[in-house]
Length: 182
Image (cartoon, rainbow, N blue to C red; front, side, top):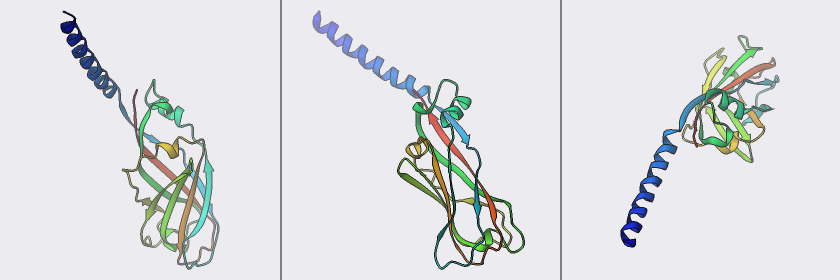
């Protein structure tokens, strides 16, 4: 009798354990977040022989509030994965016929937080008078550790192939795919 009861308890425990895992997975939610714009000012500069940092800024975002807004009942502690989906850079002021992204070659945006970094890039030189670019991102990299820090440093780096004669105001906008769950 004890053996039968023990076997039934073991089977019951296995079923409950499997069911709990299924319930946990069933509560996972996929959400898309767009962070607040980060504005960088790129000062006028001469031609550079190699990549240089054009500008950087430290930004804070209440990721917890953004998640709660999109997925009620979940927050920062519930993030299972956080991957970048898109990163765009747009010149919002200062561009003209001789000052745009076409002055730059090999543009990189670097996100730094929690002692780690992530780089998105635009290879080559954009066409004349380009004021908006989509940077190539590796959407397989989990950025949970970087973006859960209190603040992020955004840097824009590039080689300058034609001198910038005006200051450029550049807006960076990122969207993220986030999976939250219990």
